[in-house]
Each structure stands twice: as structure tokens, then as C-alpha cells.
Length: 115
Image 1 (cartoon, rainbow, N blue to C red):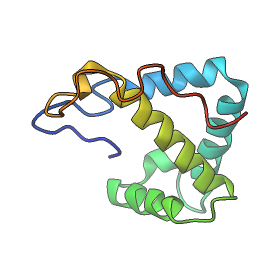
Image 2 (tube, rainbow, N blue to C red):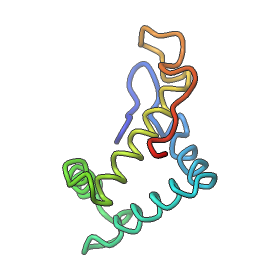
Image 3 (tube, rainbow, N blue to C red):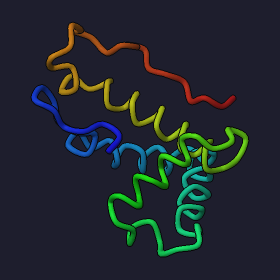
Image 4 (cartoon, rainbow, N blue to C red):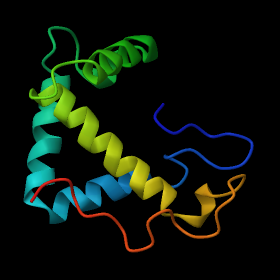
């Protein structure tokens, strides 16, 4: 799990980061293309579709993506989705419990990592 629940704040899913990622993909054609290619790749790895894998198998696949070639779809997908999810998570006050911040880390937001 990318941002799990702990004693201070909820998980990324609790804070609806997954829904926010889908919202961005609907409004940004480049992000939508990245999501589409990444999900397609996840389902074409030679075994069952990603959703049908066990949690351990999903973790192993995502771990492999995190260490793969940055210039290929799996790593680029991993890095950009991870970056967007972390930004969406920490932009919410519910994620700050237990941290020594009172404002979002980047109050003006972040531009997407593409021109």
C-alpha cells in the first residue's frame, strides 16, 4: 500500500486519493494516456490481470516497477502516479495529523511533471 493508515491519519484510499487520480485522468489527456498505458501494461505481464493477483504478487510487481528502467512505461507510470498520489494525499488537512505542519507542504499546489 502506497500510503497506509496509521495511528494519526487515514490511508490514501481513506482520503479518496484513488478517486482524485481518476478525476485528473479525465481532465488531463496526457495523464489519462499514462494511466491507460500503465494499467494496460499491468494486465499484460504474462499472468492474470493485476486485480486477480494476490496482494503479495501485486506488491512484487509494483516493487519491480519501482526499480525498472525510468525510460520505460512501467517505471514512468509508477513514478508519476506515485508522485501525484503523494501530492494529493498531503494537500489534505486530514493527512497532517501527527506532523508538525499546519498548512499543505506546497500551498500553491504542484504543476504536473510534464510541460
